[in-house]
Image (cartoon, rainbow, N blue to C red; front, side, top):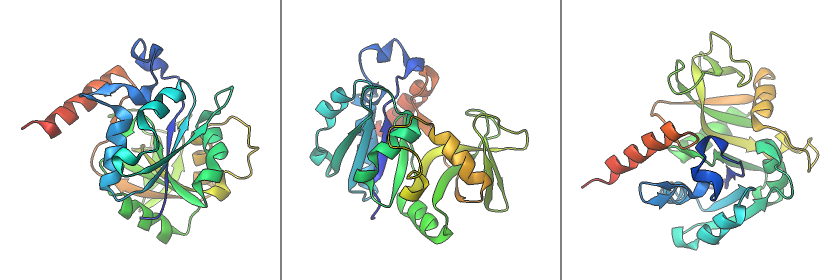
Length: 235
């Protein structure tokens, strides 16, 4: 495995208040462990080696828990938003010097039981500058926002999803640095808008996943994630 992983962990996590009034979302306890620890443990099982944590709100607390990642057999470094939140896209733009020419992108509130090697191989074979993992959703977990037809990602649109869209962003992507380099280094912007532009330009490959994802972006998602880990770890 060659690509590093950028974890977007800089948001304010307002939907998880009051839990996140004093800790960042990445440190929310999920069945006995901080969520970021669960992410790192899984990344190591996938033979990944290098992680860049893009942090903002209360990011120092994440650093205090994770350190340099050696406890999980990883090399972890940090990219800080600075005085104002950079948005998911701006955070990645700021982190480019630590990420190299292409890299995985994982949301800080998502746990994805997926084979990273297969995703990387699909990205490399696609010839596209970006890839999004997607899952047939039919509005079950959230509003479907991807049109995927005949093995091709036709359009991703989080802001104005269309009725014919039946898939959803699974929460793991791969980006080439070239997709972010045109943006000014200190400009705040949303990764969803970049994905949308890439999709309509025919530059966003799709990798379909069939196993559900888990997320802690909401209280209901947190309960589902806790149930999943309790089941996984029960004797």
